[in-house]
Image 1 (cartoon, rainbow, N blue to C red):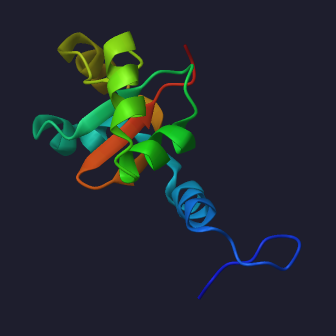
Image 2: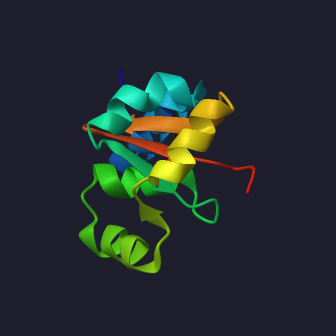
Length: 109
């Protein structure tokens, strides 16, 4: 079913993707993500970036944006020390799946 905007018009594919990502985004305990971390599938999104826009860029394979974020350190893996701290504290993060990746963001920093 095609979603419509407030003007009653169909959403663009990009807007549909963003709407889906918003509905799929939730807070989750780090311990539930550890199996994905162990497989190298967790990607940390800087608090300075918008999680939904970042997930959309990954989903759309926007290499220019993604590579720029990786180069600037705004997108990357979770350090082992951070993962251990999150485990010890039973930490909660915002997360969204863009298969095969799980993008996580810590908004407390």
